[in-house]
Image 1 (cartoon, helix red, strand yellow):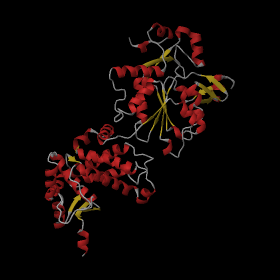
Image 2 (cartoon, rainbow, N blue to C red):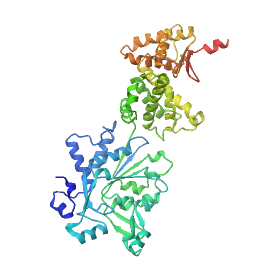
Image 3 (cartoon, rainbow, N blue to C red):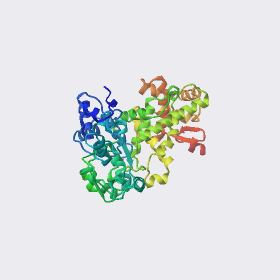
Image 4 (tube, rainbow, N blue to C red):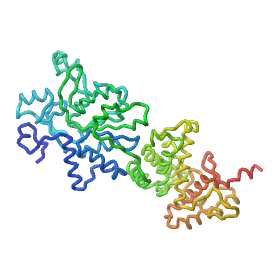
Length: 487
């Protein structure tokens, strides 16, 4: 039987539906998922052994929850996914502003309606997707927005005195009765507004312009916040923090593999891009390492954090840089090149907060430094370490490559080279192929060109070659070529 076909209170009482609080719903459905080994938080990666168990314990304890962490740590997504633990539909008294439970009405409107119509009281149904309310805390939020206020127009229309509680216009929180209510960035909420939440969290009272109404609101509160020590914008007042049952710390991905999974899941790329552009696995690793390097950079404000959205938007830009080049050259297919990473700079500069030193250097410079740092970090995982100091006459694996640049006029890689010319240029530098063949022999043929370019950029970072940016591309040279030319 489709329970939503029930339209009156009498039909509802004749059914097997039972009333329960939202916290009982969440708890009961979570228990079923755990017993049946069902993932309640599909699409969340890297939290399996940290955040998710703590969140599940909080739900089992029927706590209101504060998710505490830096930006881009999936706090809001976790809250939204909790709607999946709600019953698919719940009944409420039709016409009720606050979704009154037909068995336990709390508003005057619903109680009077049931008193007048009894078993003929009309019933409506609320889907779980409609039981999620969200409010971004900003300094201009008022008590009237959240709790409610007297509505003069309603008083005039109904010809009621301001002393009659029917003139009240309910705010967002009462209207979210029997729902999940999320307040994002709680510290940004003014202290006096936070104080207004005390009784709602603990006793269920709300007070509006002198009206003290005993409304036993049935809600699951979820708050999100940045760590208080890391923000100058505000803080959570202590009595409110005391009334929140569980505070759960979120975190950034702990490995490149987890970060790659998140980026691939979230990046927006249509089928045409996916079919036209091939992305080497090393390029994906490098892109994720940029975020990891940013979180450790002396130029970036660690207290602000580096959102996972940096990698997501950077990946989208990387694909677009390769796609644009293919379109310009009329190539049906192409693959990401190392030089395409110049395209991710706009995504990086918009996602990082710089400290004073970083501001002095400039966002674009810092972005390039982060790409270089990521390159330098990954290189030893693929090729022999480049030592800062070597003994006189000591041979290194890179001597032949450096010698090639010493004997030739360098290598120019234009940004918009077509595939054939790009491959031909790299093939001229024979020591590159020898290095890949010796140290990464299992590299796929389609990945070898990126691996060769990776070697060039890495040797620049380790001060073994020089690199110059000109209008149309990059020029790689022997480290002392400019000095020799000057002579």
